[in-house]
Length: 177
Image 1 (cartoon, rainbow, N blue to C red):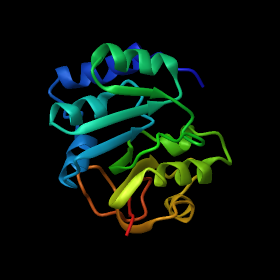
Image 2: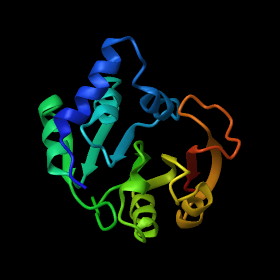
Image 3: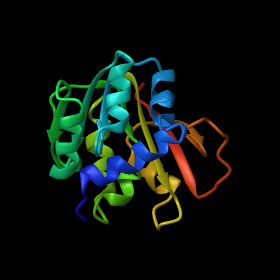
Image 4: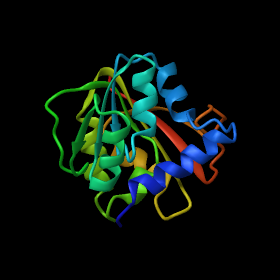
């Protein structure tokens, strides 16, 4: 799948212009009180840019050059890395690794375990891996939890912390001991 980063970002810009809150993921991550964040599957940088605006040290990684071009134009001072999330290695860890936009669903079928392992490898001791995605597309919350080599600590139905009741969207939180 190929994306147009500017078109993708324009959708969120239009929502924000109507007064809609487009920063639920950033609010959720910020509530974990990290100093460093890896936005894995950062797309056009919406979450990473907002977290950096709040004073966090953020790195964005995505495989799509168009999305990263948009992110780089929006925040040229942030670190943006073009890499495949199923095989990347940044050589460092983060307090939070967040996969905000259905990232496990955009990873080629059969590679979710590699995605989970590579993202988990970037979580610092005591840190969190947080993923939000639709569960009605053939990949479930349990599938994700089984793939992540960290302890699952919570599941929510939304980025604002609504309790998860087995619905069609999950925000899964894992922690490295």
